[in-house]
Length: 234
Length: 344
Image 1 (cartoon, helix red, strand yellow):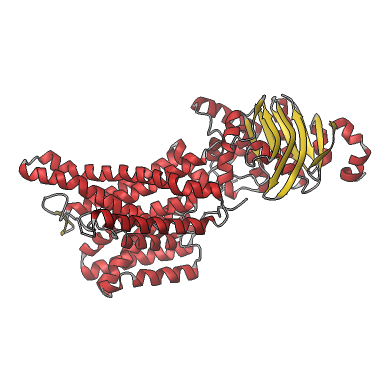
Image 2 (cartoon, chains in turn red, brown):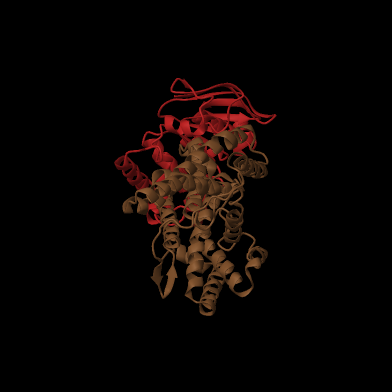
């Protein structure tokens, strides 16, 4: 469904990604792991259209996405849940969720999806009218994920959902991602928590210094000596 | 478990001690002015307040959504005044020859409507022609560049108007040739009353648009998080021209409805611009609700100054108060929720 071929991306003169190639098939859950500064977020931002690649190609469902701006990638079925969440802090939880369904013009459909995400995250229903800016870190994260679901995307890009969360909240967030996956959503997950990521994904890529260092089924990567040493601390 | 859920505007104001102090002292000042000078001064403040609010809301919107410190807002006011003059005068002339009560009653509204539409068009043109290319080129130093751009627009528009229409004053004594209304024993010209209600109606319409419609929510989303808004599928190249057009239209409507007070001439927008800026700086840059309340605060200050100090001090006192307010609460009385545009 999603394919990156020899993707280069830079911020100004600073090149971050060097020929990154990866693919995600429909219904799959794929992890992208690696150390800080490896270019994981840059990869997602490029797919989401927030950054234009300087070389190579991003294609989604066979269509080139290189010059598609961010608002169009959303309309094509890619939803990006960013690391800094980008919530609308002065809007209520409900308003945030409905903004997530901005591209859905059918009111019935919007409310249907709203019900669906409220079932996934009952906490958000309780906080329906609270302003997003006044919520705790874990709740914000849930809200961002729920909002990302509201456009009924075919592909969900999730950036560091565990960042800055207390351990029991991390479990919550990972559980909810797993629920999404079971509901048939294709997920590309970027994480620093390698162990947890390899547990819930089917396949994974290891990104180091802007290049794909390793790839394979998650169950095999867990056993790999390099991964064990560098990321799992075993 | 009782949780504090959404905050109403009233709670936001009462939560904020600076805001309560200023609002209470404004009300007291208004009452004192009223007692000293009679209710006509209070009504005066209310009418002017509505107008400053309408202008300031446009400034707050443009700053909040686009991060443009708009110093050509007065020229939108000027365009509104001219358009209203050129629509209204011919109708007025023809009415002298063949009186028609209905046309006489609606002609001023027609003039304001045309001015508003002209404002919308002007806003779209300015955004597409100037801000869009600037944004595509670079976002670094955006606020400064945008500021200089608006100063340039202001310069070209005032001088362009002088060049084409001349420096002459074009005004009308009044829109409606009817007896003033009696209100609390005060006679208030119909034009003033209408100007006030036009301001309030425009603000309410804008409020409704921003809160209740899909596109309005998108505008608010952009002002709160530009990247987030793009991720939701909101096209910034649609929201920016729309926002700029709305702000320009509000200023133009304000210029049109005040044509009886401010005659149309090339630099007529200067004073309204200054007052609108007092309002937004005092209320908090980019804070639309604050701008509405702030409009009335500045108007009361202005009227009180005229009453107790003298009309020559009209600019001095509000500026001094603004400086004091900013020293105490740097982000303005109602605070500013605007984030810098260069957040990435």
